[in-house]
Length: 494
Image (cartoon, rainbow, N blue to C red; front, side, top):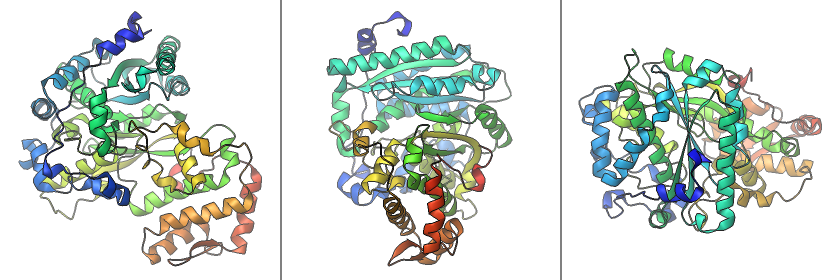
């Protein structure tokens, strides 16, 4: 149990969340109906400089680089004004947790890892076990902040409470077994009224993660204030609790890249979705699709955005950009993709708004730390004919605004391997969906570079179609019954 507390006492202790979301502000109007037709509308506020000006530190308008001491103090006042004194006091109390003080005074980063109290009971121990295999010194000095969350509406059910308790028990087991890790577990229950107010904004996920990032940022501020280290900033690394493969030198690579690029404030590691069981061999078509998504993102520049898990933002920059801002959109993507867009937009404002010399890749740097996370949602989308790359857009398709992955996985329903013709059809369907986002000439270049010119044909009208030669080549991969095979240059050496 957490500090010998009962689940009941945990629940009562942290049922104090309160947000002052300005849902009636016309500048923050948001329509889920419009979003379902065009997900990019969630960026409208970020792309409106007049609105963004009201959410960012004065240092931005002065053209100053992020400074954690200065911008952190401003962010405290911003939190009080925008989220209320009660919310602010909770953030301060949690960021003062003495367990953070066990960290080395010259830490480079802390990890924020959301843990679903009901959905991650089977994942969290194995994920932390992978972290325990990192370099012992680096693992010990890096706080891993476990943000264990559930919804108040869920906790009315005894079975759900038992499942939450099982998750906390797994965390306690990990703390005992992996004593070399610096694990800091905190618990949060989202109130029913906050859930209800967020449903027409995409659900409560953004509210959950905003609080976690705010705790991390103010913890970072406190740690650097008491340190004589040359370093005056700490990176907030976002990871997930369903990691199935973690780079053996994950921390080492993160810290090397953070130090070598101390002039940058946003970082995106390399990640793929997969499994460690027979599912990968059962769905060879999805193996190929996930490889193609990597190449697609590199080609289009989506590599230079935040994608959970495996990204980082320096605490100084998080404070300067006003964190996640006012949570007008609170659905999936509000805590990673939109945070990255805020960083890019504010950086360009600071440099003179339309400065064409600043590219996304100059702001969010692609770096080497690699991991693989659970592919349940992409797998369900792949089977259902939905775009695996957009598999999270139905995250809020549930009465409480958070759809658990096992709801989607009901679609799998069989242990049989997908048929060969079925696999070909799915690949053609999904790759055609991706390529339709590009100009025809770009789609041809990308598809031919990935599949080989003689193996496919592509037109905007017909989409991608395998040639006879391509079908024969894919047959070899299909019959091999292998798991995930990485094909892009950036993923070698895993």
